[in-house]
Image (cartoon, rainbow, N blue to C red; front, side, top):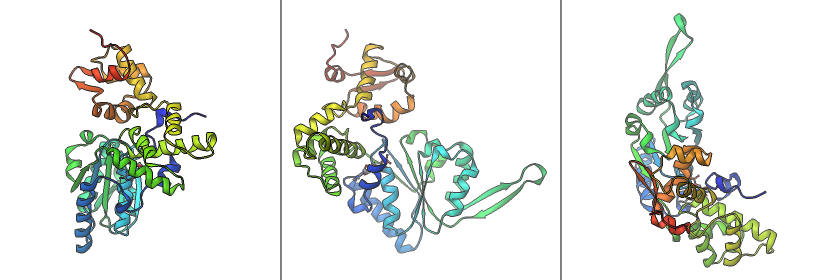
Length: 330
Ligand code: ADP
């Protein structure tokens, strides 16, 4: 079976488990963020208080979940993992909140997907470490005021702009995770090659870094794919040439764009004459969800100046035409 390039930014369970850093010092890059977090952790620990609530935002695969696992590790505490999409009603939140131990971490990924009713529960939980639970209904309904153990909420979102101000303001620490440099990605590839007991020379690490869209998760996925490819085609050894062949085979180009990224640009140029075109129209034509495009495809195209967002819609840049080897329309 081929490599699902449209899922390239999704976690590969085997990779995310094994290659994810366990401690903050094993993380590469994000030095400013790490420095600020260390200070906050030190201060909270020496005061014997739980760490303030933390919000991470940034594109998928840049380390939000990794931070949510290394922070509790630094604090010698436990973490519960939840997803905003799974918290449909306040009752879905209760097991997590009643299970928190003093100073432990509750991680809510995709926190922008939490519905309003659940969000309101979070307000008092975060602020006063208590929640009001309504038991029964109608005339028999009564409200139970539940005291929670002080805990730290870590929220992650790819859409900071979709968070309501009252929720955002309840996070004492807010950190944006930015793209990784080529050197940082190459370092991640080298470290993970050691974890996987495979040999990767510097040139090969650079090549994988160049084709990973500035994203650690993609660097890991590409490394694992190249390893599989080399295993079946070249006795497990690989150099730049084998790496290039392996990445070409799954449609990863020199800029690191995958098939879905190029399909997006191709649709915009072919069907919408380069734009401006609305996100929904592009999504319908490609038969994928607008959310997927906005989360997984557009951020890197925007950052690479292959795409611009105007008030009237998405517009392909001259650089995009050049990359796609298409003539610019007049
Ligand atoms: P997000 O939650 O932002 O989507 P993750 O934290 O799941 O991203 O990161 C995806 C993978 O990338 C992790 O499993 C980890 O192996 C790797 N990774 C992310 N950030 C770093 C980092 N700073 N240093 C090393 N590896 C990282």
